[in-house]
Length: 611
Image (cartoon, rainbow, N blue to C red; front, side, top):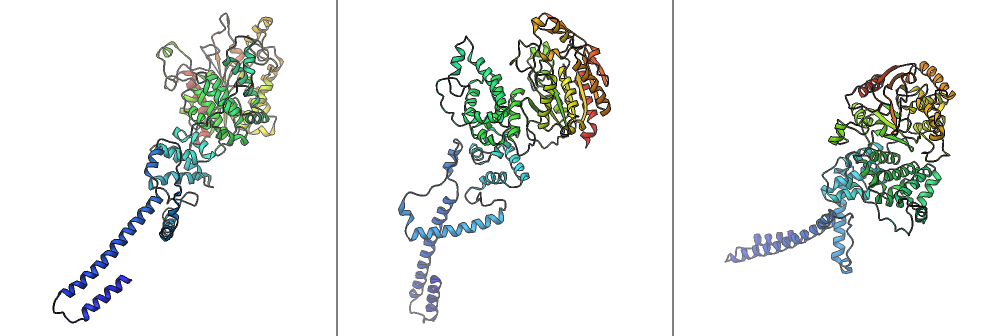
C-alpha cells in the first residue's frame, strides 16, 4: 500500500507540474519510482523464496534419509534444532506464524482432495510417492473389517516398493496386519522384520530352559544331543496341549529358546517340525498371540510357508491360521493340518474333504505318490505336475479349488516295543472321540463333508460318525456328511492281527493291532451298527481293496486286508493290483486310482459345488 501511495503522489506531481525547461526532471522522477519499486520487489521475492524453501524443507522427507532408509530398517524423524538462537527473535516468530498458516491451508486442502487420510496419518509431512504407504497403513487399522482385509491384500500385491517402504510397513503395522501379510501368498518377505536378538544362554541344555539336564541325560551313554532334544521336544508337544502349561513355557522364556533351537537345527527338519507343533499349540491360546508375534516367530513362519517342502509349509500354515483371528473362526489343534487353502483366499470354500490315515501312517506320507524307479532316477521336483509328495494338496487342490482339504495325524504302532509311551495305549473308541473333538473345533460339519480313509483310519471314521450321531452338538457332522471312501479298510478284521497274536510273546502287539482281529467283539459291533446307520442316512460309499501281499519288515509277507474283509456291504468294491501300503498312492495323476477317487468326490458334491 505504501508503494502504491508513493507511485500515485509521484504521478500527480508529474501531471500537476508545469513542463520544466528541461526534460531531465521528468525522467529523474521516473527513475526514483523504478528504483524504489524494484528494491521492494527484489527484496520481497528473496524473502518469499527463502521462506518457501525453508517451508518445503520442513514439510518433505530428506532425500539423504530416504537413501539411508533403503539400506536400514529404521524410520527417521525430523528433530528440532539444538541451536537456541534460532528459537528467539521477531524473525523466528514471524516464520512460525507463517508456517502455521500455510499448514492450515495445506491440511484443509488435503482433507478436501484426499479424504481417506485422517488424523492418525497426515499427508502433508511426506512426499507424494509415500502417500500410498501411509494410506494403506491407515486403511489396515480401519474399524471396517472389509477395508482392513482389502488393505492387507493391496499390500501383499505390491512389489515395486523400495526396501525402506517395506520396513515402514513392518514397523508401523499392527498385529492383525502382520499376520494377514504372512498368510497372503504374494507377500514380500521384506514386510517382516528379522527376529529380535535372543538372550544369552547359561551353560547347560537348551530344551530345559537354561538348566543342566542335557549333560545329565548324555552322561547315561553315548546319546547324540539331537536325539535327546527330540525326545524332550516330544514331551513339550504334549505339555503344549494344556493351556496352563503353555503359560509356563512362555513365562520361562520358552519362545526365545525354541527359536534358538530352531535356528541351530536348520539341517534337521524333524526337530523344526516339532518346534512348530509346540508354537502352533500355543497359538490356540489367544492371550499368547501378542507374545508370539513380538518374539519374532511370524517372520520365521512366513518364510516357512513359502518352503517347497509340504510338511514344513503345512506346519507353518497351521500355526498362522491359529494366530489369524481376523479371517479364521476355526482352530486347528495338534495333528489337524489344512492342505488347501493354506493362504488367505477369495475363493469361496464350499465343502470339506478329510483324509484319515491308518496304522503306521501319517498325515502326509500316506497320501504321497507311489514311487517308481524312473521318477527316482530323474529326480523330478516335488511341484512338478508328474510327481507329488502329497497328492491331495497338489492334484486334488488344483482340480477342485473350492474344497478345504484337511489331513489328520495321530500316533500308531504295530508293537508296544516301539510305543513312545507304553502307558498311553489308545483304543479305537478313545482315538475317535479325540479326533472328533479336534475336527469339530476345526469347523468340520459346517460344510458338506467327504471322508477319505486308509486301513484302520476307516474304522476311526465309522466310530466317529456313530459317536457324533449320539451327541446333539455334533449333529451337523452327520447332516453334512455326503460320502466316504475306504482304502483297504478291514471291516471284518485283518490277517495282521491274527499273525501278531500267534507270535504275541515276540512281537508284543499294540492295542490297535489287537482290535483288528476278526474275532474282536468290538469290531463286529462297530461293523453291524455302522452298516445299519449308513443305510439309513443314505451315505455314498466307495471301497478299494489291495490284491497283492505286503512286506512287513524284511521277512514277513502278508495279505493285510483280504477282499472279503474290505467289503463294507454297501457301495462299489474295486480291487487294485497293489499292496496294502500303496492302495492309496496313485502312480500318476491320470492313473485309474486317482481318477476314480476324483470322480466320486465331484459326483457326490456336485450339487454343493454348484451352489
